[in-house]
Image 1 (cartoon, one colour):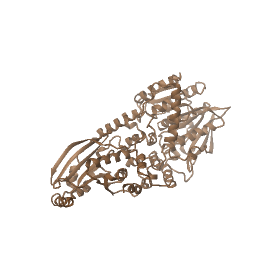
Image 2 (spheres, one colour):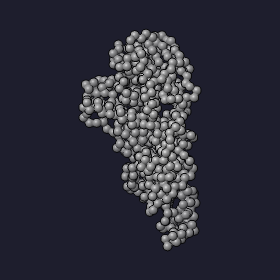
Image 3 (tube, helix red, strand yellow):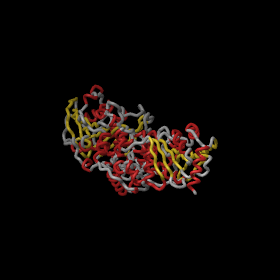
Image 4 (cartoon, rainbow, N blue to C red):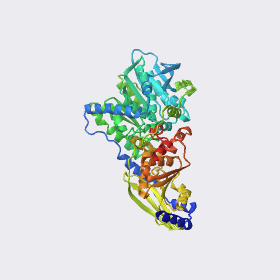
Length: 621
């Protein structure tokens, strides 16, 4: 009897409510959730996860905790998924030419980061080295095409060498000799996808430089320093906090606490600066405190035109950390300099002279005085080029190689839950925002608030002629529900109840300025997986929409994967998953390649090796 009623209802719907896509698009068009509200909810969600510094530490207690944090970050986060033989390999440097100069010499070097992936460097050696000298690792930031040849970095390295300090100037991914589109930092996400935390490659690239200096016959390994601007400042604090060989550290305008980034998401930075799980139980405030009691000078710029303005970051990474240096009676070892000339994003004269004095003081060397003018000694990019192998790997190339070399297996339902960090949510409140009831179609528009503080949006529609639809479909579209008019119209005309939804980070439920990718990075950094959050929302909406299992129809690769993951996690909730404009394999993300910003939620750490799309489909059966 129920089948007869359902069939009758369907015939009535087809006869009385032949909606058309244009009519449905008008119902889907009005904005239901503002981007400012979405951003506010994401900030509040992230703030609840920001790890605080421990209260009332003791010197012994903080020393032990710092040691634990180093081991955890290196073993469980930075080198997650990386072959141990790569991590433990000794430095392999090759000399590629010597350039003599007044009072120093430059040795052009290239070095292997991991097998098949080489970078370059320039070693600035004092002309006369008697015994063991201190050394400074100079790391790059986002300096543009010149890379290691940028003028302000050359001036710094030359001045260090002319003052008796061995100076190593490293190249950085995407700049100078590593300038390649496939070395854009966003491709670190593709390493995540294949199971190797992307930050591991960045860490190895800089740590190899420290390894080289520590083994140099004329370097005093107890007097090693690191400094750099912007992304180089981020490298400086990470390497200085995690490698106790660094005795003196001078990061310049390179990082902020998670709380600072939440307050000003434009300070988020590149993806390697927000690695998966890196901020789950510790923050950059912790990394700064882990320097205690080793000398550390924090340099920031008063009106930085890039990021990390001095007055805005100081409360978290200097004021909060001073007591940790005081534990050891070394409060003066944490120093602060706010640059006002030029006050923009820079490592120019004032900042350089601050670093010269700080390094000299803590290396036990005489006051260096003003910077030595060396404008006439600046070399061109070509003059400093060491030359890299013709078939040198790239970040994307390495991700593809790892994907090819690792066995693929079909994981279990529990494993997919752990991979996407699935935590069930419920619809705490469905706010009815608008309605329509004409031309044979009834609609209700909602903002869905979930019990984790995040939200989604959707429009529920059905034929007026079918008062109680038997079947239901959730329609998802990568471009947002407003692009789903044709698919929604088709299911309404079949007598179904249809929910056209925008899940977190899509359509109306996406933040703007900065967009979804900034928040996606921070969510992954605090230990969440955006893909898992979105799948949890879809599962909750399926329960809300019911009764009985629902059908899901997607358009685009993002919603395709979300639906496949949700159906694999809770197969009884989903009658079927229909995919349009999708992909046949996650390998497509590597081969196309798909840019991180175009699908940031799909680059989930370790997803590809165990859960390609066919494996997810099997879990739904």
